[in-house]
Every structure is written in structure tokens, then in C-alpha cells.
Image 1 (cartoon, protein in one colour):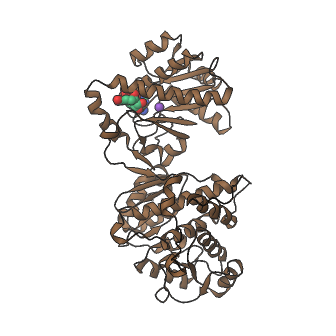
Image 2: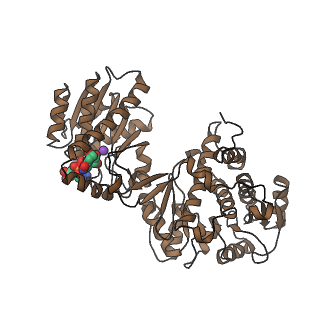
Image 3: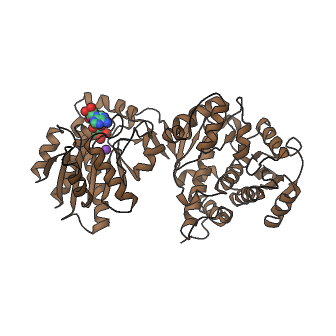
Length: 510
Ligand SMILES: NC(=O)C1=CN([C@@H]2O[C@H](COP(=O)(O)OP(=O)(O)OC[C@H]3O[C@@H](n4cnc5c(N)ncnc54)[C@H](O)[C@@H]3O)[C@@H](O)[C@H]2O)[C@@H](O)CC1
Ligand SMILES: [K+]
């Protein structure tokens, strides 16, 4: 599991070490990590470091210092290095070290910004040391033009390798917000701890691959502000039946999804739940939808009863419910049942305060806007996309439910504040039906969850929701290898991932 800390927390953790006079030592550890990661990437791209053109953008703070020291090490390996100073001053010792290795130094001004941006485009690598945890707001002045030029080239799949020092300059290390412009990176080499701002919102989209360099802050860091589950964390969260199990003990999932207008949602949620592994799916909905489900998934038990009369361990309600009054009632009943429940799509509109953490709401930013409005909070879709951590946590607090906010990085927020961010998904998953499969996967994890009440930590359901997002994202990424993703066809990937993640390797996908 990746534990993330706000930039503020990391700066606080550094304070006692700086007071002991160890700032220089920390900077050398950071710079070495940045150098080594950049060298790896450069070598992979062009075979060798010798002769590589490396531009370092250096601001006046310690972030610029790290970047200059790293570039000096690259120069020692034969790279041709140029420092573009984005401020009138730079870290003096680091600049001297850079010069000592033969680095060329240029000052960025309004008048040479376009020319230097053109030169940076032609480099093999750009190291971004403009702003780190001491930055506030987006990039301003001539460096903004430079960043915009490099970002535009990246959109076209062109331009140099961009390595962010600690974080992409212009990203808020606490929240991931970007005010105006940041410089997007292929790789972010972050120091001491992964910053929360690299896991959410525009910061997550700008960071590229994240590598964390240990600089010894561990004992001083305190409690993380966010987490990201990795593959190895999933084993304990996925359902594995024991020899003593039978269908009811494994966990029964109730699905109240689909309508005559939108039958597909019910099929996809049911298929994904079965592929994740449950003892049984009990489907409630219109007869015509039930018949389709039984054609595709004969193992599902279908009926048209009520939530109160149906014995299950968890519910999925809402996908494809449309205006179907019976499905809407079932969604409200599922929310009030006291059981864990995934409340998705059309059912989110019926959400009110007073829920419990086992209810997982799964809005995207547009649905969260409507939900927050119904709870008396105004936030546009753009507000939510700019600072998703804030609004996911706010919605969880206001409703008492767990909130899984879907997006480029999907966030799971508990009403008690715990937060997970998962970014396994491929943009190919941004397609109709994706939410239905995610709801089915999460429903299966809720129905088969065996954690005793007394052992459920705060954030337990956020962790399960994050696990579902991880599984869903990776299944989509596997499917995307063969072309555009069709959510209704994700079941083989889900099944295979569950088998692999729980230690029963079956088939490998190419
Ligand atoms: N403090 C430490 O012990 C360590 C810090 N390290 C590095 O130091 C960085 C933090 O260094 P600093 O505290 O010097 O801060 P930064 O290097 O992030 O820069 C802060 C400077 O930029 C100016 N500034 C802020 N926002 C701006 C904006 N939008 N446009 C233009 N200028 C702006 C500030 O006035 C300040 O002078 C970390 O990100 C990390 O890279 C590492 O060397 C490891 C050790
Ligand atoms: K930076």
C-alpha cells in the first residue's frame, strides 16, 4: 500500500532534521534518487546517458537545488546539461556544483522564453525543479509559456522526457489542485513520502509514473492523509471460499438494477459480480430484464419481490433504474436496510443524510454536483474535478456514507476521513457500462466481506471500494490491450485477475 502525506506534513517532518543541520544530507539523498531515476529512463530511451541533452528548469528554492545537483551528476556521466533559471536567484551551492561539471546556465526572461521553450523541446530530458512543496499557485511569468509549450508537445506524443523533481511544478502538494498551469511529467521522483497531491485531481493526471525516494523521514511523518492499494494488498480483500463454505455462507448479493428502458446495466452488474465471485446473485427487477439476465447468467436467481423480503448480505441498487418506480423504491429500501449497499447512478439522486459507512455511493463528478446541491452545498463539476479530495470527503461527511468518486483517479472517502485513490484505469474505460461493472464488482466484495464487526476499522468500506476500483481499472487495462473496452465483455479479465491476485494463477493475458 502506498501511504501519502500532504506537502505540509512532509515539511513538518523535515523540520527536526533541518534543525539538526541535516538539510544538505537530505538534499543529496533526494538529488541522487532523482539522478538515478532520470538516468534509468534516459538509458531506456536512448541507450546511454553520454551525449544526452538535459535541460534543468531551476527555481530559487530547494526544489531547484535538488534538480541542479541531479543534473550535475548526469553531466558527470557525459550528459550535455543546460540550466534555465526561472528566478533571479538559485540554490548557490547546487548551482556551483552544476557549473563545476560544465553545465551551461541561462536566465529565463520574457524576451527569451519562446526561444528557450523551443530549445527545451529539442532536449532528451527536462528536469522540472521550478517549484516543490514550497510552491503556491500555478506557474507564472515566462516559465508558464515554457510549461505550456512542453505540455502541448506531450499531447501530440512529442517532446522530451519530463521528470518532475518532487512534484510537477504548479501542483498543490496537499490537494492536487492546479491553479492555471503546471508542467506535466512522464515521471515524478518524490522525496520522503508520496505527496497526496500526486494522487488526486489534476496533480494525479500530471504526475506520470511516481517513484518515491526514502530520505529518512519515516519516524517523523505521523499519520498518512491518503492511501493507494497495490496489487499485493488485494489478496486479503477478495473473496476466496474455504472447503467449509456453501453458497449462502460465501455471500449473497442482491441486485436491484436495470429497467425496461435500460436492461443492459443489470446484465453488466450481474456479470461482473459473478466474475468477482459470490455465493449467489439474487436479482430483483422487471420480468423482461430478468429473462435477459437468465439467458446470459443462468446462475442468477431472479424475482420481482421487495428488498425487505429478500435475504442477502449486500445490495447493488441504481444502475439503469431510470424512472422505474419499483427499482427506485428498492434503492431507497436498500439504503435503509442497514446492510452494505452500492448506490449507483439514478439512485444517487435519492440519497439523504443519515446513512452508514457500509452504504457506498458511486457518483462521477456530475452526479456528485447534484448530490451536494441536494445537501445544501454548491460545487460545480469543474470545482469537483479541480479538488476532488475535498468534495469526496465532504459528501461522505454530510451523508455518513462512503463515497467512491469516479474519475481519472478514483477516490474512496470514508465519512471518518480515510481516503484511498486508485489510478489503474485506462481512459478506454470511460464508456457506457463501466459504472455498472464497477458496481457489480464492489457489490460482490461487500456481499462476501467476512470481517467481523469488531474488527472493522474506520475506513473499512472505503478500502473495499478502493479494491473494487483497482480490480475494475486493471480489468479494463487488460482488455484495452486488445482494443476499445466493452464493459459487457470484461468478465474473463475480472475472473483471471481475482484468480491471480488471490494466488491461484490460471491464465496469463498477453
Ligand atoms: N526541506 C528539506 O529538508 C528538503 C527539501 N527538499 C526539496 O525542497 C523542496 C522545497 O523547497 P523550498 O521550501 O525551498 O520550496 P520550493 O523549492 O518549492 O520553492 C519555494 C520558492 O518559490 C517561491 N514561489 C512559491 N510559489 C511560487 C510560484 N507560484 N511562482 C514562482 N515562485 C514561487 C517562494 O517564494 C520560494 O522562494 C521540496 O519540494 C524538495 O524538492 C529536498 O531537498 C529534500 C530535503
Ligand atoms: K518540481
